[in-house]
Length: 348
Image 1: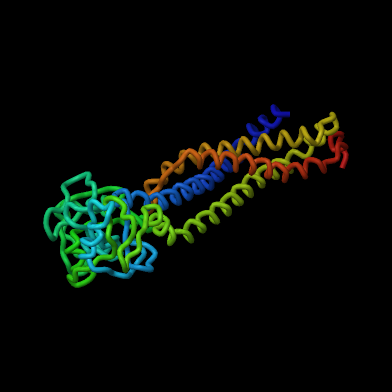
Image 2: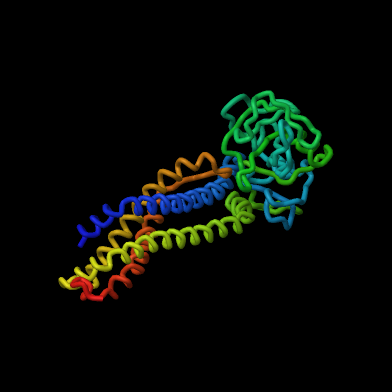
């Protein structure tokens, strides 16, 4: 039966090739969706690693440093630095704004003390050493020396960093905290949070203490709806793939009515018919997985968000492809089982 199934695939190779490419394209989208979801979630960890704080303090009652809109006095960092267990404490400002150079771009802006916690690791140029200097994410495409207008306050790019995006791939610009205070608070000496080296045993009055894990969870919270939507779209794509493969197998079954009649007349069981159809569907499904792996890597550079592939996605997709193959074969099996063996002898 498996030889008959393979010969049928060969006979109808053009149709199966079209189905293979179509299903492979659908599967490649599921891989890209999964990689995008993982990349978006991974941004939270990457930006926290870039800042490198052991603990975070924010205004009492606020959820976290990346989502709060409540400011605190920057000088409170000195109080925190005196706490047991703390070796250094620096104020930070984290906010969303726009930058203007050749065009207007949405950015995340982080203000930090020169040489303090939050100083980014660069891949080109140098870190800021004076007011009016900045480090930009490579995703912005800025050259060293580029003048950037931050809501009327100008800074010059002196360093380039990578992997400092968050909130759905929005690139980040690091400036001195004084520059960021000019942009956000008209120069007032306030901050959004205090980052520490070492972990204080308790927060001083008016401040809440957050661990990096709690900050990461809070940073991912606004992404929950997007991740759920990606998962829902993936389910729809799997249904589309099932429909494509099922329709091909069903059309094949319609065209093979007399073949099925001959097979049943010669003693073929329902199980053997199902095996033949299932093998066709599974070959098509797993062939589409291979096509999907290639296409997803080709399409990845065009994605606006961070893309992080993982072998677990391929394993998961292979399992889903197996299920899709079996489900699709059931469509053709219903037609094959209903064939009258008399057709093998010219009956109607």
